[in-house]
Length: 214
Image (cartoon, rainbow, N blue to C red; front, top):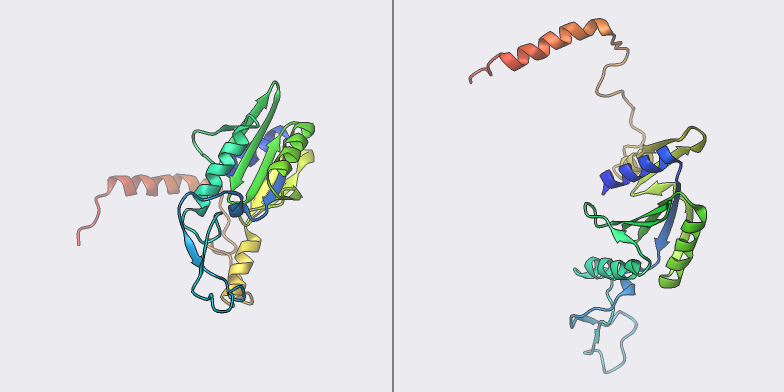
């Protein structure tokens, strides 16, 4: 998935495509379930003298093993109705082509990226999606899977960084006040072309020298 995201974002940066983001609200509740599954009544919803009763689920809920598959299957059936074609390499990517217009849709659980070369086409897709699911418009994409997207459209450049993710991990383990270091290179090291011949000799020696025996 991460590789697919990088490829699509690289395409968008190179061809100056739009990158929009949407969020599906309570995604797993969009599909009914075929299995017969029961659950205890939530606390506060039980009726006096009927505490032994249970609830039969009609829709997928978060926590069910099949919830993600049910949602993904349901989304696939819906999106096909708008002439999107699933990618053979990554089943979370869909493509729609109309003449010279192209749009990509990337789905990760309840996060959606819309990438394309025509604003009107993307707007129509966004409007249609809102008729199928309850969604939140996130505007131009800035974060995906914890990865921050920095874009300079004038220079057709796009950068990805996980600095926020790293900072959250440090805070989680109470290391956000730790002293930062430059790794793995030692500070102040300067490399130039004159180091290349010696480096190549060392690499050649590693390939030809036998491994030491214990």
